[in-house]
Image (cartoon, rainbow, N blue to C red; front, side, top):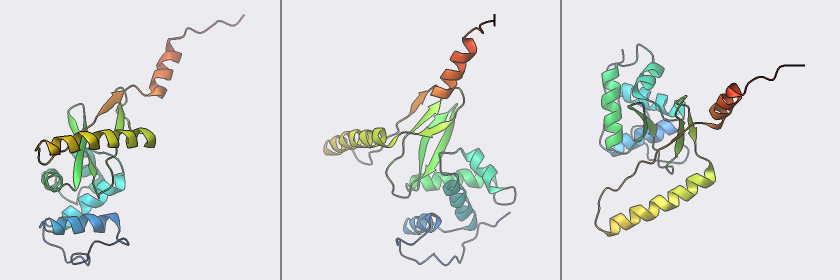
Length: 177
């Protein structure tokens, strides 16, 4: 298991620049928020970035391997990352929260298949339209005096491939003559 000590990683003092990897940008955000850069935190961030999609804490812990850190450390780190805005809770699947990295990119919106729990990113045109609408609502709330405004948008449905497969399975076979 990796000890939870501060690392002497070379990026600790580096300013946020364009030539940094996503893990380096995430570590910079940790440092900027006053959080220590530890080996478990770096490993968790690297695994979260590597998945490239919303993931559960259990799945993230599985990605880390048995000798990286315990599940409690992952939960605590994810809570700390969420509190500084480095990760965002994307949505729930059957009561399980899914998280994704937030490196300053626009929010990504997803649709979850109700039958398979497969997560797909919303198409670019719909996501842009949704971002504009959400921004309007957030701006209105801020103008009314609300602070720390945020949002969660969740879409669920049966994917077209599941619906087609179900329809094909329900069509009786025509006997050959």
